[in-house]
Image (spheres, rainbow, N blue to C red):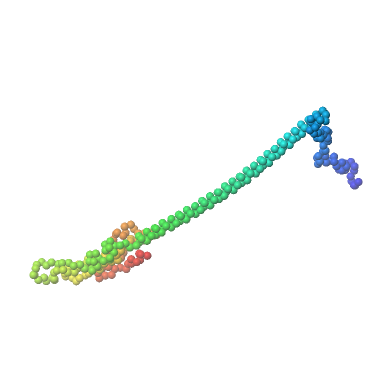
Amino acid sequence: MPLGLSRSSPCLTAAYNLRQYSLDKKRILPEKTNSEPDFSHLDRIDLIGGNGRWRQRRAEDEFARRQIVEEERLREQQEMEERRRQRKLALQAKRRRQQEEEERRRQEERERQRQEQLRIEEERRQAEERERLRREQEERDWLARQPKLCLVCNGSGKCPTCLGSGQNFTVFLATGVGKRNTRGDYGRHAQGCDACYGFKQNMLADLKKGTGKCAHCDGWGKIAPDIDFTSPTGRTRKGSSSGPGIGFFGGGGGGSQAGGDSPKTPKVADFEG
């Protein structure tokens, strides 16, 4: 016997009766005692009374018990099959919900991609439309800055009065026929065209011819538009092509005159770019 332990110790007592200890701790199930007789060996012959009245009554009780057990077994089997069917239906429903959720997500993704594509196309279309409008506006501005045809000379650049010769002819009549005129010869004489800065000298002075150029466009045949240089886009003012010429196209003081030079001004080619 180990040192330090006595026979009155609980551990030592439990070691001598392990089965009772396990039953007390509910580690093992208690054995079933056959307190009732077993009639499972009874058969159909006993039920119909072939082996006596006593065995027939026992057989009737046994077969009633067997029927109850069979009904319970069938009921449990049906319940098990029903639970199995319910689990199968629940699994199918779960899979169907998952498939529907996945399909819904795929549809949402396709719809999102479609909306994104539509947004990109709309932005591209708006950008193209803005670019088209900008180009059209630049084209209109460029056309508005181009010199317009001079309506006075119809683009020829010649003075419409003298047709570019710088002079016109005037008939001077004498006061009488056959009389000698001390002032000069009467008749048809050339005069400077005052429409293109010439001078009508009559009969006494020398001929002072005009430039022969259109005074409205200064001989260029075109009228430069009135450009608003204060505008960031250099737009032309409304009605600028129908007004009088400006700059080197001007008819007053700034154009070429007979015997003089016009001030330095830009050329028409400067506006065509």
